[in-house]
Image 1 (cartoon, rainbow over the protein chains, first blue to last red):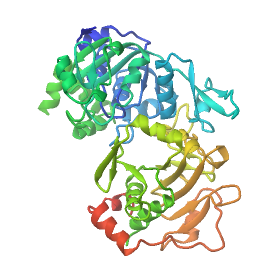
Image 2: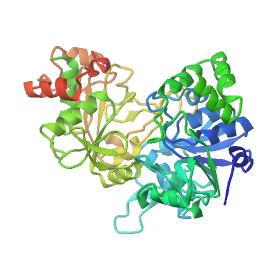
Image 3: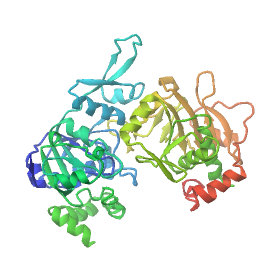
Image 4: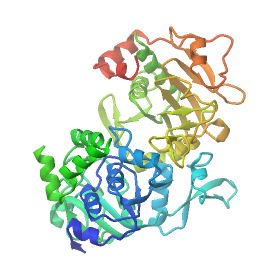
Length: 280
Length: 230
């Protein structure tokens, strides 16, 4: 376990990998890591995410071959513009699961199980658009047929938490852990960015023990990225930057506007991004 | 009394008799309806703030992060009211995409939790614009399943024009009531499939004085509901 930079993390990733991204929608996304992946120009990634602007940015940068998700949304803006355009133009592949199925797939991977049974998906068109999806019949008296949700195994997981120590113990301070622990448990390589890197004593004193979502066994690298979830929310450290999110969504509407947005905010490194955001 | 007030009460009515379960409204008018139900005839309902906090009349009363919501879904102790970009006569719902799934003409949200919701617990729908392109013969992508595909219960569909239910022998859609000032012919014309219409269709009940006071003074003092429906 070592502390790393965002570029160190990206150096561990390869074209074609399956990468899980923590958070939910436009909430507590590891955006500094996502921006670094975009800058590095990785290609052909399969991105597993409860999708928000992480998916949008990666698509816009041409990094994505396939998205595995139940939705892609900016929450306060219902539809993610890059994801929408890419789907409508047939530029990306999609594995579309019910949200609970994706949870179960991560849980199966975390438990080293080939699949877990779930009712979600039965009768819907999810099996139609996932022709490899199978059902399983209960071997017990009920004999019921269930979806056999396959393990969603990740090459790497990227998550963002409020606080972490150098060993990879980490705490969320907001109301919801989302599924960040499962993303880490489902992945071969696990990278955590945090708002503040603190001593273990400060981490432990920073809230109840239940908030210590990640421990050092679940993490391979820690990066301190202040405002690293921007423009998604990272409560209580900061709320979603709604004005910036609107600017992002507006810029995504056209190639010229997007080029301008990218040149202003994304073409430099993370420090440049944070300065450009602060200066606007 | 406005059309939006009638819709709020019609949404609230969907949860009548549910007892102690999680009411999950998607959208402002369903949310106002669930809050109204909790404050009046359905005090046992549990409501979240849309994220991880359980709230009752503006006060925090508990914690329910997403992973716990999925446990409630699987346990069946939830009644959700979702939106529908398309819905058919058996209550199959689409919020994923319009057109061919492989390359949609309009990408929407994705299936979200609709497949799991509908096979586990009661589901209702809120449609702020009742029109033929929403009420379709066949949905392009079945997200929430209908009664012909194994839904537990599609309880109500509340729209800006009417309330629909599935109280028919084959559990297909039926006109339950029309909002005051709306004709049955209007609802038929706005529905893209043949709708079962009883011999006599009552008006959707109007809000009581005390319900109106709660909506106006306590739940939506800024009248945001009139932006969702006029």
